[in-house]
Amino acid sequence: MNKNKITSNAKWTPNPFWVIVNKEIGDTVRSKRFLILVSIILLTCLGSLYTALNNFSQAVDTHDPEGTFFFLKLYTISDGTLPSFIVFISFLGPLLGISLGFDSINSEQNRGTLSRVLSQPVYRDYLLNAKFVASIIVLTVLFFALAFMVLGFGLIFIGIPPTPEEFLRLILFTLVSIVYVAFWLNLSILFSVKFRQSATSALAGISIWLFFSVFFNMIVNLIAKAIEPVRAISDSQIIHFEKTIQNLMRINPGQLFSDATTTLLMPSVRSLGPLTMEQMRGAIPNPLPLGQSLMLVWPQTTALIAGTIVFFAIAYTMFMRREIRSR
Image (cartoon, rainbow, N blue to C red; front, top):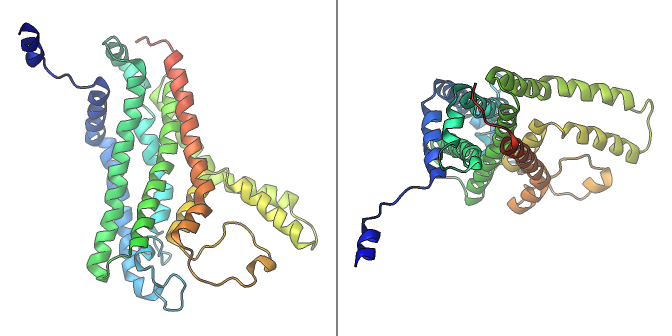
């Protein structure tokens, strides 16, 4: 009797992990930094959508292999005045990921709240895992909202619903975008664990983003000029040269994201590497099925996922081994 009474009167206590996740989500969506970045991304996406809708009739061609994929063109059309939707995501996505993670650990340690939280009956890894999960939840909601916003405006102005394959391609494109931003998120969390000052971790993340966005292509071009054959040689050697340059370009996570999203949103893309005339002979200019497009972009997606896991594993190991002490 007493045991049953004690059990019935016991209160349910929430899991500390999800308590921290809810707290981090609330802090993130209410922060001015996040609101400013979301406003910029929303305005740029609306601008690219406006450009795509204005040029939609010129972009649709009945003889185009992608002529039946109307909705996918909303994410790829550009008239030169504004970049397309995928270009904006490729450019602004890393900034969003860096802004969500560059001060996730060192700011709390500098304020002295980190030692107070860990003095409670909470596992140490709960804190780092919760910050990552909270950021992923925010990114997932944001990117699906943007993708469905473009889809909704397309339904209003075009009046034709997307096909099931188009819808699946948009979902996969959104998932790849989340993985791409999570790559930069985990890199910024790693810097937040490594460096004591938030400004230092932010500069480190932005410096790597600038290097891959601006300087990396210049370095690859210099390497290409240095190893470029001085005279005409066989097709196999030319293809080997092109593959070497392409493999160097794929060190850039932005290039991996561009290859994956372009293949998913442009079904006519049949290869991401150089092809010989023998390989192109007999090819029918039809869009690839979704399954074959996934096989084509699987290496790029796997590389982004692997990089995300590696950065998080390094940050996790460093955080679990460090001494937590407030100033």
